[in-house]
Amino acid sequence: MAKLRITYNAPVVLTFTIAAVAAFVLTQLAPSMQPWFAAAPKLVDTQAYVGLVGHILGHASWEHLLGNFMLILLIGPILEERHGSLGLLVMIVVTALATSLVNLAIGSHYVMGASGIVFMMILLASMANVRGGEIPLTFIAVAIIYMGGEIVKSFHADGISHMAHLVGGAVGAAFGFLAAGARRGKKLRAEPVVKNTKLPA
Image (tube, rainbow, N blue to C red):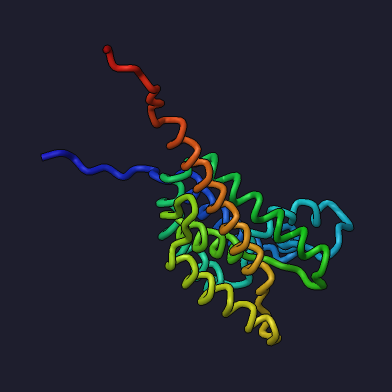
């Protein structure tokens, strides 16, 4: 009987989770550290620049952290296996930066949490079966349910950054289309070229 062993199967997702838990514990012990893990509406100091990406590690409560990382730990390893660790890391960083830049442009409050990453992963996962010239109905359903819901909720002052959710979802959809195009390009290059040959008379 083969021995079972625990593996660090999704290094980016697991490291991201550990870093977020560590940041939460740190900000609970030292509340003055919280601005380092939040996206500011203006770039006024070093904390604000660190927060451009660092805000995805900051969470206001344990429930906030748990709600985000339950989904990240569920979807993330599948995406990391599909797109590679480096690919997923790039997607996470780009989503974090895109959220911060939109907040700088139109926001007036601090933003913190990995919910934008969650929405990026949800939309990206829903596009796993995208092929050239086709859009899966599942992607349309997810976009309507999640993105449509966030647009409606954005008109209510509930203390949640729906802007981060919308940006994350849009970035996830964009990456999904790019990945589908790359897969189609590889498939076309891999197909053998059959040349016309004349049969002997």
